[in-house]
Image 1 (spheres, rainbow, N blue to C red):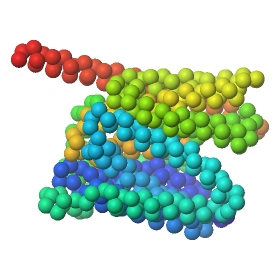
Image 2: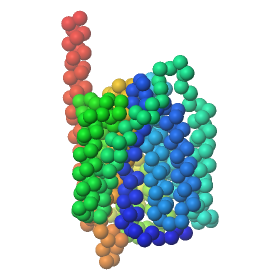
Image 3: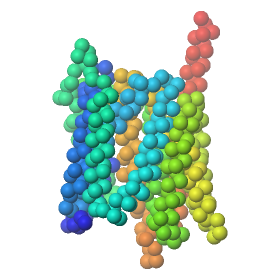
Image 4: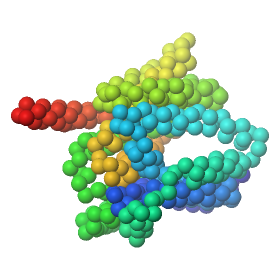
Length: 426
């Protein structure tokens, strides 16, 4: 059993770091900073180290530090996966590939909680990280065998000194300051950290050469990508908020046992596993339509959580999570398809690292922002009115993700008209 930490505020801030942008290393362009193989293997090695540190932690603070190191490993691995999909699959199969990647992640969330529960019930919780270490070592062995090495005759060089380390540290300081303000309150030291982090980031980005910039120089002019990133933030902050607080609400107001709550929550990943390939094919054919339909389904499922039917509440909740599972199966591959199709292939890792970073930080912000409106009451661990307000705000977030499709539709039509005009003149 972990010993309690003496500094609760420190624990909250360390936990917030898991939502901070640990995208320190990203494949940038043809003369890539770090080759894909090195980055992927480095991430897996750091993941294995973090599991060992987690398993040997003696207090909560040490455990959270180890878990933050795991977030750092995620930041190394995730952009590489997008780069590999871009390189290995033709354009009309990218959505399909991301769909199955989402299905694999859904399978992990499906099998993870029950397996973890069995290990914790019959063994020590530390054995959970022993199992994770085993999975990490297997993944490392598979990666070493199948990810190709860099061609010795390639002009690509490993230039670790070109990693945008200072830019990334400034960005981490800014987000950590924002998280602290949300968690702890408007204290002078956190306002100072937020301001200094933001100012230093802007200065570093302005004066850094292209290869040392954290953000691509022309990223803001890539309107399709910017709106896709904004859409991802609205969608995932809403989805994460529901995922964070729904279990407590079910136990508090529906009086469900943890096992019943677990059964309901497993419905969504099961649907995403089954429909992963289907959602990916829809994303390949019409990614904008798939995103819009998926977001609309998320609104329907969220509204359904507001109602309480005495005799059919369990079936209603299961139905709503089936609907949200279908929505997720459509949106996740479609979002990645839209983003990856509108960036330079040589900058896939950099752009998609930022794209995934936005999804990661949305999870951190969801807990910090929405937790304020869900303060416990005398009779419940979660506020009923606060939860309903959360659902309304989440509906607004999903609705905003639909509205951000409008500029993409306009851009697509303009591009089609331009191509048609060129063909007509020819």
